[in-house]
Image (cartoon, rainbow, N blue to C red; front, side, top):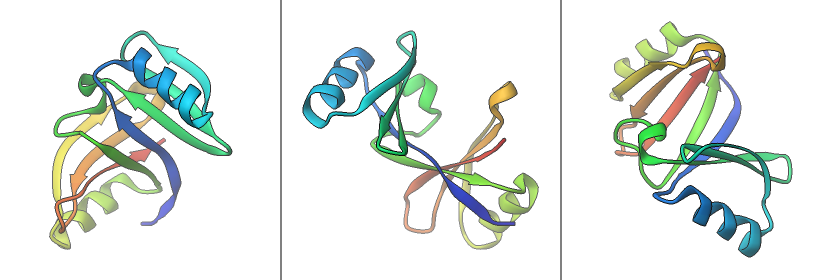
Length: 115
């Protein structure tokens, strides 16, 4: 079981269009695609930054959320629990993979995705 990379950094926003305009105009991020008012994918150099509606981000999400790619969902779920973390939600995203929202031992919320 291992993290294989940082998949995305999610920023939760109530108004996707307004947030995209801000990140484009103020920071120069490049828009890759949008999914209605639910999601916008942007680029900051080689890094991916997702701008998510609260509903799309998942239960308990807010602020900035790192999304780590993992290689083994079951082993990672077990390790999170074994080491004092908490599973907040689990989601099958079809062809996009399977995700876990977790709270670490310091109270930080992260997402883990297995493609």
